[in-house]
Length: 152
Ligand code: 4NP
Image (cartoon, rainbow, N blue to C red; front, side):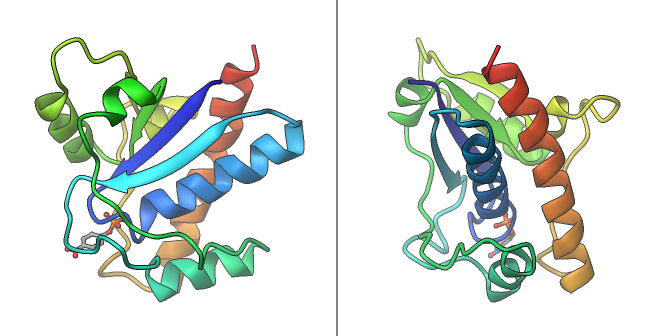
């Protein structure tokens, strides 16, 4: 089965929203995907998403309160077919920690949005609700592109 892991820094703001957006899109398309998210850091491991991310998802009809943060691990590079970084620093970090022989395809979230290739999703951590809505917008745009590509 095609599997997608979204990775940001803390796994409590951006990647949980990306995970939820792709899950919604896959459901809409009837696409069978295994989807998860993780952080390059472990500060928030075991915690639910940031309350502002939970609220942003809820404004869009999705409940992400059951998600729990975890750190990315070496086995992920073999277990997932796609590992999608939320920003360029996350992508750099993933390239550095990728074990020899890693089989996962690495990309940047906005590579999946025509015209926004190579761009980072801004970290809303120091922002407000509006910034979390922007994150949700980026996540849903990328989910559309990613799901379309994976269903081909
Ligand atoms: P995320 O946001 O990477 O989108 O989950 C952050 C969450 C926590 C921290 C930084 C970014 N932090 O420094 O704890």
